[in-house]
Amino acid sequence: MGAGAVGLAATGARCAAPAGAVTPEMFGAKGDGRTNDTDAFAAMSEHVNARGGGTIVLRPVTYIVGRQQRGRGRNEPSFAGSKIIRIEKCRRAVTIRGNGAKLKCASGLRFGRFDPQSGKPLPNGRGIDLTNRAMPYWAMININHCSGPIEISNIELDGNLQRLAVGGRYGKGGFQSGGTGLVLSQNLGPERLERIYSHHHAQDGMILAPGVDRAGATLATDTSCDFNGRQGCSVTGGRNLLFQRCKFRHTGRAGIHGSPGAGVDVEAERSPIRNVAFEDCEFSDNHGFGLVAGTGKSADLRFERCKFVGTTNWSAWPDRPEMKFRNCLFVGAINHARGDADPARAAQFMDCTFTDDPALSPTGKVFLPKGKWIAIILKSPNVRFRRCRFRLIADGVLPLSQSQVIYEDCDMSQRSAAPSGPRGTYLGTTSIRGNAHLEDSIIRGKVTLNGRILPQKG
Image 1 (cartoon, one colour):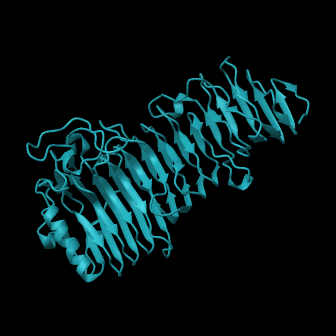
Image 2 (cartoon, rainbow, N blue to C red):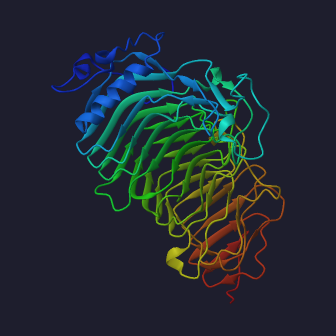
């Protein structure tokens, strides 16, 4: 198991199957790291579906999965992935006890655009042609339209991206051919995800889209999504999701990348997204944004004690209503903080730190835009920074903002001699050190600029 796995050690006692549980070995799986066990997992899934739910117990071994069927035209994919674990329409509880197991994609499967006749890779496509689409699997674990509680724990999902045969880009924004570690879609009961390591998938580490008005919540703890092609995690619908101690890192860093290439993408597609919280999570070194929330009917997103690191792109793009950040660290620039005439709906940053310190980056690189601003906050009324610290020790400069942005009790400094423009409405007591220009600012509190107290105005 890779060094990035999150606590996937298992004890023999936990591997024991409770009465009535099923194992893939009961359906012919070998779990020897060589034999393809796809058919056994598919048969096990059908058994669980027929019973309306149940418990699946795995061993702490490597199961090779993933198999493709060649298409026959007539809107069929050129190479379609077989089902692996697919649970659907179950009314009883569904539990997957991983016990440290690894599901690893078979080497050599096709992904992207391939000719269905010759099997050869095709160049990048401009539109969508299903008959040229190849994917190793839709999802290693796909649970959808279930009404009972769902629990998945202590499992590694390895997409083996480095050993896929990659063709041309398919679909809008690059590679949109399928190939995700875990998909939970339209389920109506509570969902619990614990100690999952989902990495090197051609598409996403996870896609979460709970059903509308479902009972309970989704809780993901101690879960990591690393080196996936399109997203670490996509939240595409639903309410009441909580992520604790999760990591979303290195998206697009394993050879292919699709848009937006984010650590986490919050994008309402099926239903509005509300009441989503991240606590003690990391969004780091992604090809695209660390966090992006910029489209769809999404609102009410909260972040506590999280770390956002942008090495080649924005650390965060928080462009939805009611986004709140508390005690968070931003390494690298942010953009598109959502403003609103209603202060309660504008983005709020409380007790946060913004810096360009390369020592806090896993690669030593920190993303800054052309003007080197640590934040660009334009046409964003009532975006508020309260008790925030701006510590710019390299090339970065203080935010580019306008007078409708609120700074309250902040401490701001830059080492660069380049001019900055943290214009805003200043409340409380704020200290600024560096080449900062505050023309058109509204000063209602005490602002000290390079040791000089500025007069109140506005």
